[in-house]
Image (cartoon, rainbow over all chains, first blue to last red):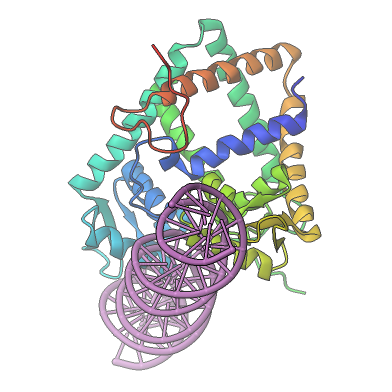
Length: 161
Length: 161
DNA sequence: CCTAATATTTCGAAAAACGTAGTATTCGTA
DNA sequence: TACGAATACTACGTTTTTCGAAATATTAGG
């Protein structure tokens, strides 16, 4: 009844909704995906350096500079130099930025609790178990990516031949 | 134990993975999001017109033209005129395009079946029920968006009361 | 101190999205 | 059956975003 291909199609339909949220949510996406996740990261960490940002969003430094430029210009974040090491730039959310993230997260919470409230206790329990199982399985698989894909990023140990 | 805020954070982490797949999958995303969903739509429908494409990806015509231009140029789709109405352009996947979509869908199927095989029969049953319940609930909520947002697009069947 | 390393910005180029104006074809009707 | 409106797209130019390479500023190490 629910064969794999069918489920894949269903999955794709739902992924599309994430990529085009404006089609079904009243959410004015005034941010690029980089900007969005930068804001979310800032909301979680409160203060980050450019280097930390680059590690998180996995982009070149120059891209991160552009992101910070725009977010500062539009008033969503604050950029200041570290007092102890003046090379380092520290980013924080502005009041407006915090508000925006809060609004987004509230919206997500809203949908989430709506959905969760619709489930029975038993279903909730099963769902928790399933989610953990799925995440573990994926993690496990992804920890050892296809051969030749290891040492792809972060500091490399150089093999001396 | 699993409060709402926690789940939201978890959700965001996982959404990030969808937006930055190259960080955890060996998937060379040579496509923009528009191009990607155009290919997936073509894979499902086999033949589409520009107008149908625009309806699906919800973009201006000129954007769609650009998408088709690039996909044709790179050999993933074929663009031809309708015989019966020469204004209409018909898009189809090329052999290379089909191959690429197949590869992507196979990869998704792979992860999916890996995860599903890890679940017990009981869990699978619960999951199916939960997924449907969740999707229905969301649908139900989204069918009546915030007031003033109705008749936004496409033709609606009007309920006569 | 002076050189290397670190942290970040600047600059310029390329790609993507899209508004507006234009072209080609078909439809409707008089 | 001719001709203006409607339809289906494309072309062009601008803006935004990403990002490589070179430049700048600060700190660390010997």
